[in-house]
Amino acid sequence: MLRQLSIFILSGMLSSAALYGVDYDGEKSFLFETAYDVCIIPPQIDEAIAKGVNVVNLAHAKALYDQNALFFDAREKRHFVKEHIKGAFPVYFDVSKAEYIVIQLPRDKKQPLVFYCYGESCANSYEAALAVRKLGYQNVNWFINGFSDWKGAKYPVSSNSKTKSTTLPIR
Image 1 (cartoon, one colour):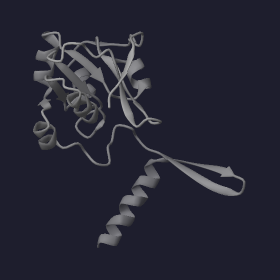
Image 2 (cartoon, helix red, strand yellow):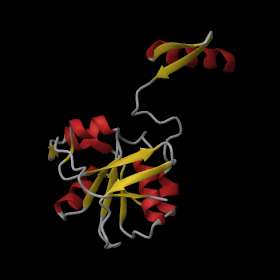
Image 3 (cartoon, one colour):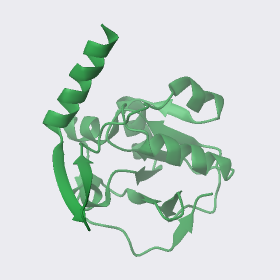
Image 4 (cartoon, helix red, strand yellow):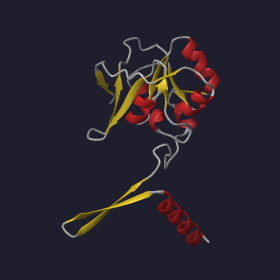
């Protein structure tokens, strides 16, 4: 039964993912391209709470927005540029350094910060929120429902990219 389930899952992944073959001097290398909005290991709500990150839903995120909290978008750059929560700043993952890069962290470590990405199954905003919490920020919020719920509620979105600020590495 477990073998059949594994074969079924693998065949589903192969059929839904684009497969590219690259030839390096006779050796074949394959790249599977899957949707970026799905995380293999979903973030843990209990762990986030235990580490001092507030887990917020759509209503609470909107209330924080109305109170001028700073929003940070941890989705892929191309999705951020296309559209994001109005006023949000991008969060990038630097693969070469294995760290998140946040643009324009405030000096005030009590300033409410809200991190979001694609939704509950996405760990990008969760991991960025944990990293910022480790830097000593006290009011860190993880918007679990993400951009799709925000946009679905017809809350303010923008396609203006705010990338003029200095980047600060999160360690």
